[in-house]
Image (cartoon, rainbow over all chains, first blue to last red; front, side, top):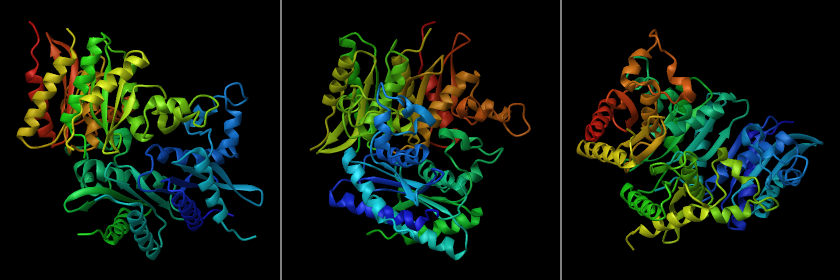
Length: 136
Length: 136
Length: 136
Length: 136
């Protein structure tokens, strides 16, 4: 099972709708199982920095096979993975908003959202994840 | 006049439709007047290299205020701008498929398409440009 | 309202004057609302590292829509945005000296100063901000 | 003899005045003998790509100890230095508009101008060079 462009657009539309509901402009990105971009959208007036962060969150979730908020807990000073945020050309994000996309227990891609508080980003990313419907 | 996300999605949808008509998977990107991404989509099975090239074509058209095929003519060996393709962190593309988006004579963004032959890329980019409807 | 080159030079001259008053050589940069450089000046004998830091501070303030000292508070270990300093190609600075330039509540650019202590940098950046006079 | 900030600002003002005379918005940069920026200014509406190119031209003139148009002749296909434009992280520009700043036969810095045709860039850079007055 691979994420098609139309799957990604469905996920992004759902995340965007949630972002509109809470009135926070977001950048939303979906990547494939190799971490490569399938689609990305920047809502009007979203933070410029979110262009990079949304994509990097989606990438990180695939690259580390973990949600970025879970990774963040392991990456604090004194924790086992402190310093990982500068690995891989500093593409690894260690705060919430990036999630792996799973299918039958396998990771087939990632979604990343940036633009609001970490909680808002995670909420919109979840909306995107929930919108994905794949065949059994 | 600024290009909104919905404008960009309309343009990309039109370029994608043209790409489907000629049966060539493309990557399509739209950037704002500062060269920053608004939206990007990778069609299923598109070339991996096209992710960078489509975005860089859109960026180049804004950064140089010229279509990338026009720039290419000035950037051949012996021509005045030979070597420009490695400027600006090598983001400048010197073959066709990137166009400025104009409104009342001013450049308000750029579109870039990559995935087929240069002629195919340009054809799909034109379809995107033609789909943009802005108020007088 | 856009920041013109002459606005930027006025701001930089004021920041420089303040730096001379406290006898600390500084680098001062002003960027537009897209984060792109308008003008940058390095005072004689300023720290070499300040070339990058001043520009990155100005960029960060625009990219995150926040002063860099405010961002710094959110980016400490254990805080929500810990790790953001290596995002966006490590261009995000998380200590003071970068400020958004606002006009009627909208961010139209950023100023960044580097070369002294954080307090000195902030003081000179404020002098630059205060020197900007825009029409009502 | 070192180029001070005030020297650089004098040179840039002269280059800018020439650019205004021919009505072409330019980016103008001056670097020191180590190739590091002293000052840079982007005139309103100048090409975005010129931000990088002006600075890289100034850097190249210092790094290669040669005007960039002279270097360009040596960097064409079949010539001895073909390929040099991708050296040094692709910062080497091989078309006109970058000149070393000399004092008593020694190179003490560089000036780079970008925004118009190569001839226009060179003309404005010359205006900058001619404006520099150093003690005997």
